[in-house]
Length: 403
Image (tube, rainbow, N blue to C red):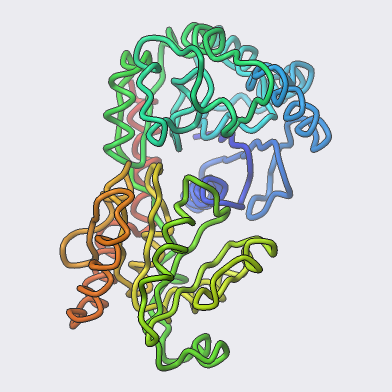
């Protein structure tokens, strides 16, 4: 079996690591595997295929800031890439994020439709079936169900600061993405799967495959870490937040409000802040910049007493899984697919935007945490072992090819 994955990045970020994890399992099982990517430096793949260039990504991003035409640039680069695809002649194409300023969706799907190539498409957000945005929960928008126009999230990723082209984008994407003869959609959460069934993609079968993580890496590490000692918080109850970028969607403001409520024996640690954000944090929030060192991240997760994820829009955040695997319970807002990774034994779900409930949840875990760590680890091993989850993809490929 020969599989070609296409994603914005390779081996970095959550989607990039999912692609390389699938790639590794394919090769271990004796299959041929390739990853095509559009941005940043690839990691964890012997045969990465670059689509376009970093310069082209910047050019497309700049054009989108003005014209709101995300997905319709990179014509020459995509045509060149299609020539490479023809040389590889894959048995199946597995799409991940095809947004990210690097590929032309029209040219890509023209090739897919012409060849009747079997396609698996893992959706990591909602961009595929909207006229602009990757998420619409925050805005409470439902235009994507019938037809986008006057997008309330125009300034959010993929940002456009001048024109609103959401109506035209929606119609073009609907025409491009429908009518594929052999396409299966995968979503990491039931929440996103249910949205797909209400969108113009409802003609396709939808399969739920949860994200998985490396349980040999993410595991309890309290005995050997010195994180609390290094930051002089050994006697404090540590409340942790982790994000690749702390923007409006990730709920940074709720940690700042939480900082006003916590007691002297409690401290907040936030990973992924910019240097500017760190300088603006209250004194009882310890800010740490984004780290690509997984060992450091495992140490921080393991040392935390509770992980708080006040996300306002999310699919199936791997940060929740990483925390569980490290033995740390999770508190999250009742939004998107974030709630699907935990149960009553491994954390709690609180009302969106409610800091009082958030703090109450923290206190409940603080007072009733006996045996919680073991239950968190058990849940991660039962449901979120990446070796199990990504074998699900291989089984899906085989099912599709048998048909």
